[in-house]
Length: 89
Image 1: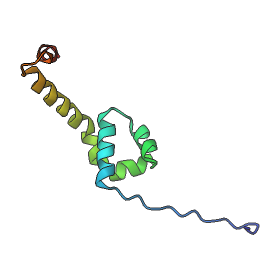
Image 2: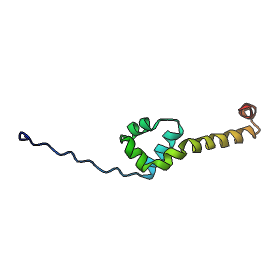
Image 3: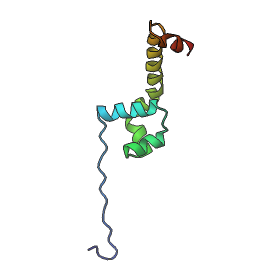
Image 4: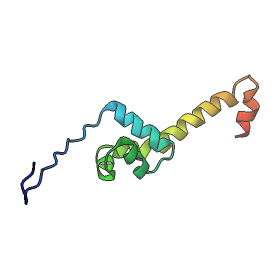
């Protein structure tokens, strides 16, 4: 039991970014999620998200768009039925 006038100290565990977490943030940013949504998903603060995952947040959308464009180009230049549809886009 806590005595009157005394408070329990909350201990925060330092966030440790891993390659898996970085890939997750990269993908979520690429999918168009906001920083607030990503932070909540990762159960960290917005400040922690920006501190440890700045690069992933900056390049997430660009990297995903490049992958989609590359796949679309591959399909559009192919010989199957999807080539014509893909070429339209």
